[in-house]
Image (tube, rainbow, N blue to C red):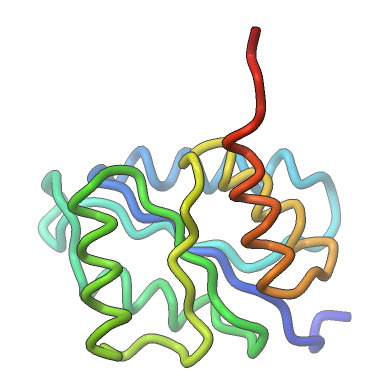
Length: 136
């Protein structure tokens, strides 16, 4: 159901190309069919390295479908920017949550889970669980 509320995902990176690539990877691995709305918010407004509160807020607005927005960030200052936006209530959807998860694995888990129709708490739990994924 395209009209059903779904959790949106925002991927915040210091690099626009990194955010875009992780978004493409996560949506690609979510399988065919409809996927949860995903937006990349990478770099600064002029294309440089860094983070932009305006780009993050715009991305959150684009993916908001009424079931909340999960934001994953790559590094410390991106996390701080998102925390400031949430604390200030800066133009973010009401149910926006910063998710403490590894950026790539967490993004894949969040998008797959949201695409299956899960609620915000389940999306956050799946992304956070990615910390336990072992590679060896």
